[in-house]
Length: 311
Image 1 (cartoon, one colour):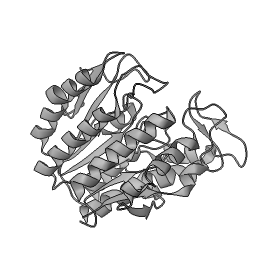
Image 2: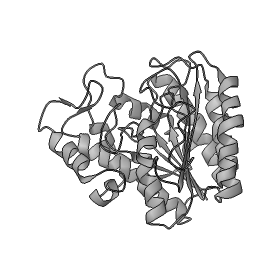
Image 3: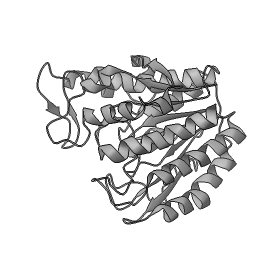
Image 4: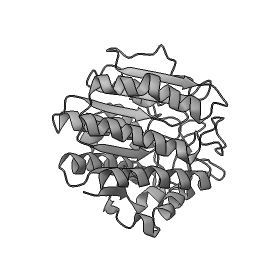
């Protein structure tokens, strides 16, 4: 089988203010990296719009309504100092969430081996009732809840290697025993959550914070001693990845020191777990990564492994 690539041009329509780190050029860099002949075998699919019912899996009606009401006809509105919306933001966010849902459907139907969702805005900072950190809706959390409630899975794992802790995913799934959420991230750093002692209501959260300056060896050790054993014990039926690449040494927003080879390595290890417990079923969704050259190189390394493992 093949690896699917889900994306949509409307994800470029979320136009952030001048100088903002989460800008359309990020997605353009990713798509350019995946347009070369090495990636010709990707099955390219259009991300659909998420429905209101999909959003309500993770967010209350009031949150969805507030986002909709905040969208201006022109100009930009700041929801917080980091998070802005403009006329094209709602469509982009619905495509971002819809990509993950469609990817879960395709992988669980056996249409493709695995999938990568090249989308924006990202989602892992969006809490159940609060947009923040560039994020409007919890894209990956929504995908996990869809897999549970629509497809009847009993155990879904989310792994997050973005340099910033996925506080939104943790908030949405704190009380959800059917989802294991595992994260490596820099600490101290925005948003300030992700201490090792934060375990979730059912012991379903595993945080492995790393200090500023940590390099690939420390990152790999955290996975080998904390994250991978937890995944093995959980035996997930589906693995979802919050794929942020801002732990790269070139990224301007943090101070971890990873390289492309570390992201390839962790993708291999995640696929190993999926092969043992999930029939190889993996859906990865873009989160952060703000140095365009590093982002493109890391996505290419990540997707190359998905293709090799799915082929």
